[in-house]
Image (cartoon, rainbow, N blue to C red; front, side, top):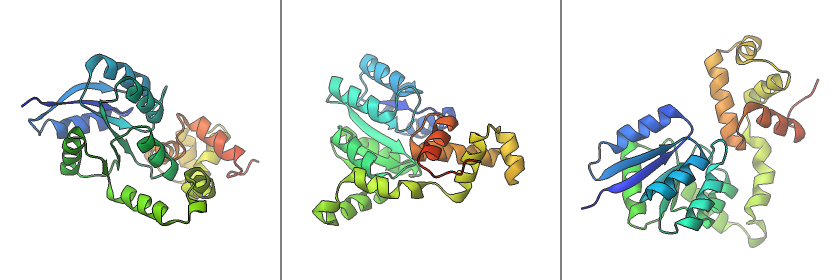
Length: 223
């Protein structure tokens, strides 16, 4: 039986290596390429013709949603499984509407990932438990409340924690990660982790974009 050809697309080297090590445990799966941004993912998909693409949502140069739309436009037969740490309603529906076969959170277990790859390769649609709950919630809403974009605008300000807003405020002041750590009495690694989560939540490519957006929306105090 032919192996399932998989392309991994994520902008974090360690995550790619972790995913690859999991997939190597399954003899029926072959990793044929690794992309580090949406543009690379699209170009490698055209060249390598994978069966399944594991596509991170938030990547530089071209994000996962943009790459998904281009890939599906060129290769409707490819199965795309979106990976993210964010549960944003509008992106879930937008990805599925754009042709994704699945949308799962990155905290899934290794055996779940392998199962999902086999399922989408067979043409099944898969959504992790948390995401499925959101679909049910949306279906149970009154019709006039189902607009995902409207729902996002109401909840978007609640995406960031108090600590994340404090960190973005310091970014706007031009502070480095080390300076932010000293000001807030936390470790530099903690600052980096918070910044990564912030950029994932807001779907921004860098810290300055995220801070500028939050300031524009009135979430931050400007001295």
